[in-house]
Amino acid sequence: MEQFLRTWLEWPSVAAFIMKYTWSWPLGETLHFFGIILLIGGVGMFDLRLLGVAKGLPVKAVTRLLPWGVTGFFLCVVTGLMFVTGVRANVPMSPYDVIKSNVWLQLKLVFIGLAGLNLGLFYVTGMNRAVDALGPGADAPALAKVIAFASLFFWLGVIYFGRLIPEGL
Amino acid sequence: MQEFLESIENSAFSSYIRESPSVLGYSTVLALHTFGMAFLVGLSGVIALRVLGIIPELPLNPLKKLMPMIIAGFWLNAVTGVVLTSLAAVSLFRNWDFWVKLAAIVVAIVALTKMRRTAFADPPAPDDAPGSPEARRWAKVMLFFWGLAVLGGRLTAYATYIRIQSAAAVVVAVVVLLLVARALVRRTNRRSVEARV
Image (cartoon, rainbow over the protein chains, first blue to last red):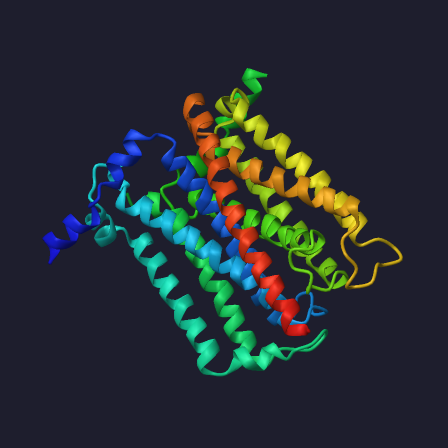
């Protein structure tokens, strides 16, 4: 299994591509940051509205920002996969060893998972339908506020741990 | 000037942040700088999307309430930016890319201020009013220069030829992404109009 993962994580060789095309790493970094901005501008803005910021906005209108946040997340996933699978272009380590040993990367992945579970909870508890009807000035239910706070916490945690990854290389 | 920059770079504070083995030093300052960027650019971008008519459903005037968070993001980045600059003051002040980033931030902040003044005029425009031509112009300028500032920040550490190649690659990628986004926005807006009819 280990050998399979070691091989699979480096095939095709992203590191070789990054070393050949020197612009690819900074391009990935820039798009990763654009992704973070879209994520906070979309998902973060939705969370802030549920928490009572800019309460004059009807929640239904704010949901129009969510596709922008999801786009940002996918930009980060694609570029993040490039950083991990192509890590050998910068440090003499295999992606497998980085995933296995870098506690900050592990914490980042755990927080992404927790953000996903939190989103699942938002739907399972029916909060998605409950907040959809909230007009200008209306307060979100307490559970929706807890989920929105957790969402912001997890996403900021993802950004924080992402910044710490080089410390563990 | 050189001596002044060296004294900043070698000060006890800068040395501590730069050399501290704790993750609460350099990496945390860097992370806070990223938080500030996300709130400053992300939330001012939300106002720009409404002003530009990309998300017309958002009522205009309540968006003004985002300004305190946008300003908080700016100050967080001003403070962490000064700290990060002090860690490598000598090389950064000689780096043209650093000055491009700073100039882009200044223009973006001016454009943000102008967009706020024109979009949230006194007396306020109706919530469903389209953004004025002036507000739209400033929104476009702001988004462009935020993009340039982020790009400049990312490329500071690279050699000039890599910067130029990377900037060209970013332009190509952003144009492709914008074309896809435009197609998706048009489709969603058409569906939204059909649903209302």
